[in-house]
Length: 181
Image 1 (cartoon, rainbow, N blue to C red):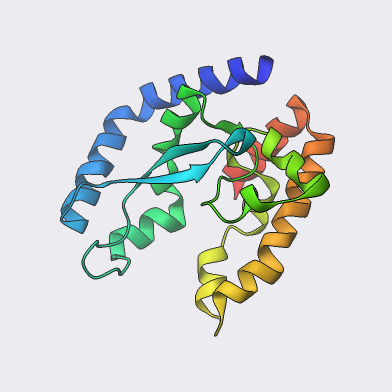
Image 2: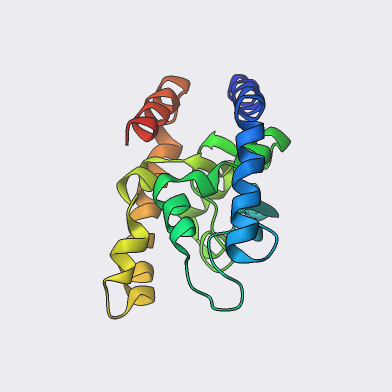
Protein backbone atom coordinates (compact mmCIF):
# COMPACT_ATOMS: atom_id res chain seq x y z
CA UNK A 1 0.00 0.00 0.00
CA UNK A 2 2.89 2.37 0.78
CA UNK A 3 4.36 1.70 -2.67
CA UNK A 4 1.06 2.60 -4.38
CA UNK A 5 0.68 5.82 -2.36
CA UNK A 6 4.30 6.77 -3.13
CA UNK A 7 3.83 5.97 -6.84
CA UNK A 8 0.61 7.99 -6.99
CA UNK A 9 2.08 11.03 -5.23
CA UNK A 10 5.30 11.06 -7.26
CA UNK A 11 3.38 10.64 -10.53
CA UNK A 12 0.90 13.37 -9.57
CA UNK A 13 3.62 15.82 -8.54
CA UNK A 14 5.69 14.89 -11.59
CA UNK A 15 2.79 15.46 -13.98
CA UNK A 16 1.97 18.77 -12.29
CA UNK A 17 5.58 19.93 -12.54
CA UNK A 18 6.22 18.86 -16.13
CA UNK A 19 2.68 18.84 -17.53
CA UNK A 20 3.15 21.96 -19.65
CA UNK A 21 6.54 20.74 -20.84
CA UNK A 22 4.98 17.37 -21.70
CA UNK A 23 2.39 19.13 -23.86
CA UNK A 24 5.21 21.00 -25.64
CA UNK A 25 7.06 17.71 -26.22
CA UNK A 26 3.84 16.13 -27.52
CA UNK A 27 3.37 19.04 -29.96
CA UNK A 28 7.00 18.73 -31.07
CA UNK A 29 6.56 14.98 -31.61
CA UNK A 30 3.33 15.62 -33.52
CA UNK A 31 5.04 18.06 -35.89
CA UNK A 32 8.11 15.83 -36.18
CA UNK A 33 6.15 12.66 -37.03
CA UNK A 34 3.36 14.48 -38.88
CA UNK A 35 0.86 12.55 -36.77
CA UNK A 36 -0.47 12.42 -33.23
CA UNK A 37 2.70 12.68 -31.16
CA UNK A 38 1.41 10.19 -28.62
CA UNK A 39 2.32 6.53 -29.11
CA UNK A 40 -0.13 4.09 -27.55
CA UNK A 41 0.65 0.38 -27.49
CA UNK A 42 -0.80 -2.63 -25.71
CA UNK A 43 1.59 -4.15 -23.19
CA UNK A 44 1.33 -6.99 -20.72
CA UNK A 45 0.68 -5.78 -17.19
CA UNK A 46 0.29 -7.22 -13.74
CA UNK A 47 -1.16 -10.75 -13.69
CA UNK A 48 -0.81 -10.83 -17.49
CA UNK A 49 -3.61 -8.31 -18.00
CA UNK A 50 -3.02 -6.13 -21.08
CA UNK A 51 -3.04 -2.33 -20.74
CA UNK A 52 -2.23 0.61 -23.00
CA UNK A 53 1.13 2.26 -22.41
CA UNK A 54 1.71 5.89 -23.37
CA UNK A 55 4.91 7.27 -24.87
CA UNK A 56 5.90 10.13 -27.10
CA UNK A 57 6.06 9.03 -30.70
CA UNK A 58 9.64 8.83 -32.00
CA UNK A 59 9.15 7.10 -35.35
CA UNK A 60 7.57 8.52 -38.46
CA UNK A 61 4.52 6.32 -39.16
CA UNK A 62 4.99 6.28 -42.94
CA UNK A 63 8.75 5.78 -43.19
CA UNK A 64 9.22 3.70 -40.05
CA UNK A 65 12.42 5.59 -39.27
CA UNK A 66 13.39 7.32 -36.07
CA UNK A 67 13.71 11.07 -36.51
CA UNK A 68 16.46 13.24 -35.04
CA UNK A 69 14.03 14.52 -32.42
CA UNK A 70 12.77 10.99 -31.78
CA UNK A 71 16.35 9.81 -31.28
CA UNK A 72 16.89 12.62 -28.77
CA UNK A 73 13.66 11.73 -26.97
CA UNK A 74 14.71 8.08 -26.78
CA UNK A 75 18.27 8.73 -25.60
CA UNK A 76 17.11 11.17 -22.95
CA UNK A 77 14.12 8.95 -22.05
CA UNK A 78 11.80 11.93 -22.55
CA UNK A 79 9.61 9.64 -24.65
CA UNK A 80 8.84 7.66 -21.46
CA UNK A 81 7.46 10.61 -19.46
CA UNK A 82 3.79 10.08 -20.48
CA UNK A 83 3.99 6.81 -18.54
CA UNK A 84 3.60 8.89 -15.41
CA UNK A 85 -0.07 8.82 -16.44
CA UNK A 86 0.09 5.00 -16.41
CA UNK A 87 1.55 5.18 -12.89
CA UNK A 88 -1.13 7.61 -11.77
CA UNK A 89 -3.88 5.33 -13.16
CA UNK A 90 -2.36 2.31 -11.40
CA UNK A 91 -1.39 0.37 -14.54
CA UNK A 92 2.27 0.79 -13.65
CA UNK A 93 4.57 1.51 -10.73
CA UNK A 94 7.65 3.70 -10.65
CA UNK A 95 9.82 0.60 -10.13
CA UNK A 96 9.11 -2.85 -11.49
CA UNK A 97 9.77 -4.97 -14.57
CA UNK A 98 9.44 -2.93 -17.75
CA UNK A 99 6.22 -3.94 -19.53
CA UNK A 100 6.67 -5.83 -22.76
CA UNK A 101 4.49 -6.68 -25.72
CA UNK A 102 2.63 -9.97 -25.79
CA UNK A 103 4.81 -12.97 -26.46
CA UNK A 104 7.36 -12.48 -23.73
CA UNK A 105 6.38 -12.13 -20.05
CA UNK A 106 2.97 -13.63 -20.66
CA UNK A 107 4.65 -16.84 -21.92
CA UNK A 108 6.85 -17.37 -18.88
CA UNK A 109 6.43 -20.65 -17.01
CA UNK A 110 7.22 -21.98 -13.56
CA UNK A 111 8.89 -19.75 -11.01
CA UNK A 112 9.52 -17.06 -13.65
CA UNK A 113 5.76 -16.34 -13.83
CA UNK A 114 6.11 -14.68 -10.42
CA UNK A 115 7.27 -11.63 -12.35
CA UNK A 116 3.69 -11.18 -13.54
CA UNK A 117 2.59 -10.68 -9.93
CA UNK A 118 4.46 -7.37 -10.00
CA UNK A 119 3.15 -4.17 -11.48
CA UNK A 120 5.28 -3.16 -14.46
CA UNK A 121 7.49 -0.16 -13.80
CA UNK A 122 8.97 2.92 -15.38
CA UNK A 123 12.39 1.67 -14.38
CA UNK A 124 14.10 -1.43 -13.06
CA UNK A 125 17.55 -2.87 -12.59
CA UNK A 126 17.14 -4.47 -16.03
CA UNK A 127 16.33 -1.14 -17.67
CA UNK A 128 19.36 0.42 -15.98
CA UNK A 129 21.61 -2.41 -17.19
CA UNK A 130 20.20 -2.24 -20.73
CA UNK A 131 19.83 1.55 -20.96
CA UNK A 132 21.44 1.38 -24.43
CA UNK A 133 19.50 -1.66 -25.63
CA UNK A 134 18.35 0.01 -28.87
CA UNK A 135 21.93 0.83 -29.90
CA UNK A 136 23.15 -2.61 -28.87
CA UNK A 137 20.50 -4.41 -30.90
CA UNK A 138 20.99 -2.08 -33.89
CA UNK A 139 24.65 -3.11 -34.05
CA UNK A 140 23.85 -6.82 -34.43
CA UNK A 141 23.14 -8.88 -37.52
CA UNK A 142 20.28 -10.75 -35.82
CA UNK A 143 18.91 -8.48 -33.09
CA UNK A 144 15.72 -10.48 -32.46
CA UNK A 145 17.67 -13.67 -31.82
CA UNK A 146 20.08 -11.86 -29.48
CA UNK A 147 17.18 -10.28 -27.61
CA UNK A 148 15.33 -13.58 -27.25
CA UNK A 149 18.37 -15.67 -26.31
CA UNK A 150 20.52 -13.24 -24.29
CA UNK A 151 18.85 -10.00 -23.22
CA UNK A 152 15.35 -11.23 -22.37
CA UNK A 153 16.53 -14.19 -20.25
CA UNK A 154 18.90 -11.84 -18.39
CA UNK A 155 16.04 -9.39 -17.80
CA UNK A 156 13.88 -12.23 -16.51
CA UNK A 157 16.60 -13.16 -14.01
CA UNK A 158 17.09 -9.55 -12.90
CA UNK A 159 13.32 -9.11 -12.50
CA UNK A 160 13.01 -12.38 -10.60
CA UNK A 161 15.80 -11.22 -8.26
CA UNK A 162 13.85 -7.99 -7.80
CA UNK A 163 10.70 -10.01 -7.02
CA UNK A 164 12.43 -11.87 -4.20
CA UNK A 165 14.37 -8.93 -2.76
CA UNK A 166 12.15 -5.91 -3.37
CA UNK A 167 11.75 -3.25 -0.72
CA UNK A 168 10.79 0.39 -0.51
CA UNK A 169 14.43 1.30 0.21
CA UNK A 170 15.55 -0.82 -2.76
CA UNK A 171 13.04 0.97 -4.99
CA UNK A 172 14.42 4.33 -3.88
CA UNK A 173 17.94 3.19 -4.79
CA UNK A 174 16.75 2.05 -8.23
CA UNK A 175 15.05 5.43 -8.78
CA UNK A 176 18.23 7.25 -7.76
CA UNK A 177 20.38 5.09 -10.07
CA UNK A 178 17.94 5.78 -12.90
CA UNK A 179 18.07 9.52 -12.36
CA UNK A 180 21.88 9.51 -12.16
CA UNK A 181 22.25 7.48 -15.35
